[in-house]
Image (tube, rainbow, N blue to C red):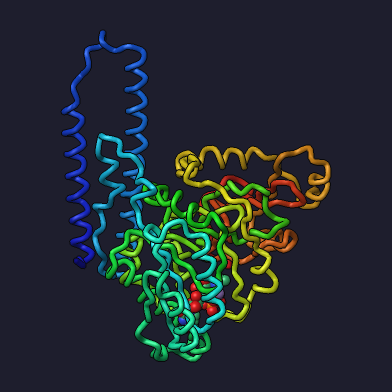
Length: 451
Ligand code: UD1
Ligand code: MN
């Protein structure tokens, strides 16, 4: 149901008031324990319960803050939006009973593979996806095809017994009303049209709760499925996340640590094998862009301060040299991003350290405790091997670009965010030494004028 901006605010205020009343009521309802009956053990249990509750309330508050900023943005843009206040995280946070995180078994995670006119590519992608798939029930494969390309249709048809669905985007006509400049970029508009339609099929027609988005020119690592199965509960329970990606934008062999278990939070949406929830589709459905969908997701208006999980060593690899962007970056960069070869049993690992509250403390402290050195000392520091990590600072767009060039990492920004950055921190490796590129003093916000 779409509501006007005024009614949205009114409903929001009313809901907040109800929540306050429910909370007060719950607090009043708690029996006061007999002090003499409190043993050391029961006090500790109670304390643990209370601190858990505090974290939940903080999460709920954060979620509310996010909702509010979304509402504000919508009002500013004068668009009608859907009220999505009754989100599971939110309900869970006001409940006094701790619910276990969603189990990795119960959720079905469809793999949506985008195809157009590259039959050899889709065959390679599907062969890989089938080779490592642990369960066809949990991970149904759905190919969605655009471009009305006969050879690609025949190629996908050969998989009809092993894939769940073969969808066809119905409108293969030209994109109307493009100006001269946009016409040259029409491919990006077609991709965006296809994405909108296919995500609508996944969430609005098939009613899945989440999706793993893939493209026809991606290979996968053998632990690709486990990685998404294990990170799904994180995505579901941490409202400060909006995606999980299999891709490290700076994942070249010489620039990563040989540690297949290493994961990060990233403010830069990596794409290229990534998972999203139906609740994100609720936000995007009506405002999906006409072109350049990935850069659009990277904008603050869509991100709302949220992050993605991404690995140190990519779980996807792109072989798509000939694509819509005509290999821009492919020869110089993309083809060097390595695919993980040491599988991790992700679902057996405790990934709760990636939740914002925990992560921001431990990670940021570790980073900012690393000694600052000038770039000119880096080679020496790496040779000496006395430091376990160092920090190199940047204070402007110009110093960042210069650093990136020297260190051979991606030097572009989207809405002011460098690729892989989390709160301005970029972790890389130089000659075996861990290096963090960070702002000079602790990060405050990204500057969208950095382009
Ligand atoms: C780049 C991105 C890609 C993103 C796209 C849109 C990289 C390496 N790739 O595309 O993730 O989706 O920009 O901004 O950064 N396709 C259609 N219809 C078309 C043309 C292509 O559905 O008319 C499909 C392709 O089958 C493919 C996907 O869209 O699965 C991306 O197309 P591709 O040609 O690979 O473009 P990139 O330059 O890689
Ligand atoms: Mn591509």
